[in-house]
Amino acid sequence: MTTIRLHNTKTRRKEDFVPINPDNVRMYVCGPTVYDRAHLGNARPVIVFDVLYRLLRHVYGADHVTYVRNFTDVDDKINARAAESGRSIGDITAETTQWFLDDMAAIGALEPDAMPRATQYIGQMITMIEDLIAKDHAYEKEGHVLFRVRSYAQYGALSGRSVDDMIAGARVEVAPFKEDPMDFVLWKPSSDDLPGWPSPWGRGRPGWHIECSAMAHDLLGTHFDIHGGGNDLMFPHHENEIAQSRCAGHEFANVWMHNEMLQVEGKKMSKSLGNFFTVRDLLDQGVPGEVIRFVMLSTHYRKPMDWTERKREEAAMTLKTWFRSTDGIKPVSPPPPQIIDALSNDINSHLVFSKLHELHSNGDYTALKAGLRLLGFPDAEKLDWFRGDQEMASFDNLTKESGALFPYLVEWQRLRNSRNYVEADALKARIEAIGIKLSIGPAGPNAEPTEAFDPAKLELLK
Picture 1: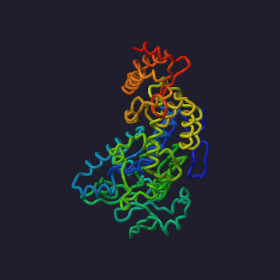
Picture 2: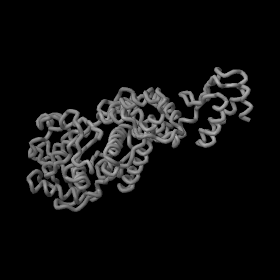
Picture 3: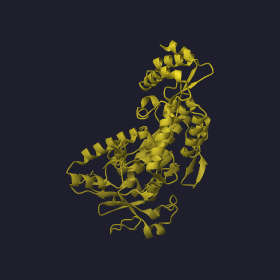
């Protein structure tokens, strides 16, 4: 069986991935807070862990992998959006959740096996909080329940910081009801105009961090294989998840994976800089989802990704070439070993693209198509955008008498573009029978005379 090696943030080294149970490989990835469109940076972890999901399914079998990605649908950002828009919270979260699913599908992401929403797991969160209080890892004060950070000796191990260092410059909320500045909220009271649920501590709503621990435990058990997300979540979110889960008696995740952040033209994406845009903005501008996916995967997930117009153009050109070369090719073989090996080396998608370029250069279009499939790219037959600017290659290498051949070459191209492959193949056979070799190159369909070509035989095509 293929050995997958992954960089584990927890141990700070690349390790052989050994699942707890090969028949039930389990992965949890932190999902979006649904109050607006997904911006381009939100797409990076989706694509990265989608590729890992596809690799795990390939190695262990689709029925033996469980992938969970949550929706945070209770949050102060959502409350603020409802207040400013006058719309109900339920309408906003339902709409933005569907937006997210539609946009991620457009960039080729499979839907996870489970997509829990925080509001569906309030009971499990309350149960977990009660357990933490009973074990003296949490306390209630003024309607709030807070996690007692210093009760967990390993706090900070994931991000490599001490508690005292974190206090100096971290995002901590100073409040009179806290025993310690680092203690974080598990439950907080809700006023009548905010979402709330009954609890032993009064009507209220959960803090951000508790939801992922409760949902992961309910859907994946006390001990699972992989937890992923962007490295901006390492502290405080993932650090807090580990602390509360371990103190509740859960082993939690073996492997922690974090993707680096995204920039635009060398600068941090920001509305103030005018370089902030959503996935939907790009799609509406005519950028194909496959191009977005290609650009994202062209940089290794643990390195900062810089979205540039030049990368977008190069991605489109490369994909056009690859799709033209694989259009109509059947059957598709299993992914070639070099593609599997590169992906298994800590999801080295950058290296995978180098291998795909080699396959194309060598004319191994069947293997190229299989590799593209594994990376989550659709078959060329399902797409139209790469066809629009196809041009017939120059036929200067044909004799003057071969002008009569041109209409048949155009017809062959038309049949292929309309996906009428039966008639296209029949016409190709007739053309090649008179000594013309037909192929698909980067510039589109190409025709080259062989030694057997005889212009007099053109009459046979009529």
